[in-house]
Length: 351
Image (cartoon, rainbow, N blue to C red; front, side, top):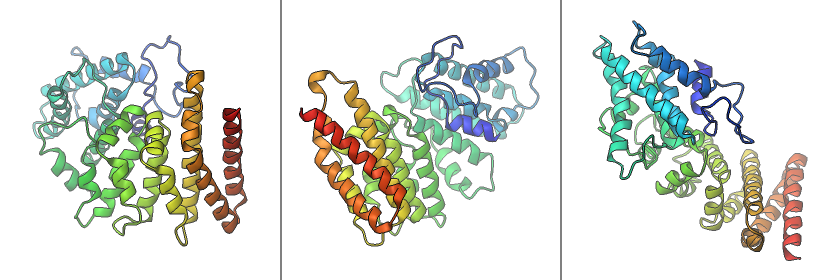
């Protein structure tokens, strides 16, 4: 079950369904998770009408339902089509089951997706869902399977009362982040984990941006409503955001991310782990920007680098001062590597 859960959260969104198809660099499946090219056809065959099934709840317990939902976030049309096909067979298998009470919960989860797609305008066939939505639903299924979970009441109350899910927004983000329940810390950590794990590519950042996720999280920094773990989760989310092309350019050029990071570093008695997270964000941001510049035409190369050059140098200078004060050699070496790369790119761009 642990492998299946990891396979759902880290679903290979770039992998085609055809085993003979060429796979681009970075699209090779992780050997520690299940391969959708095997699992999806296997689940389809397992739930074929001619196959006898006496324990229908095993479809949920084993993770088959969650895996089919996770496949809807794939970039490949064939994988999504297979995922929708498996979900249709899950509905057919549940309809024939005699568990009148138990099956209603899982049929309702699937109806949320179906109704959410139906209410959208110009929804294409086998539409792709954001990983933020699929990861949320996968984690919801896990909670509904464990009634003793502290989040069971909160999640079931919000999910089972809805006729449809808004597939163009981060589900339940604002409500759980600003929860007034006694278990508000657990709810905050849970929804922040969902956003962190669901931030995979430009589509996910676009959805998060539409829900003002990064703006809300940045405004919550330093708030007593969020503990140290929550602050670290915020930095993890920003790190995942800048790993996407859209997220990096939007946060760095339009939302003042680098200036905001300077303000964190300048705080009194700043946590050493915060500094390491900030350095990772800066490093990934710079790598993403460099990869974007490489794909641009010659006459447009260097424009983005020049735009952020001043802010980047100010941030790196502040990080160097902080690293020397903390006497951390590894941190200082990482900052120097980024600084030297920035100087090299700036010099070549000016020539």
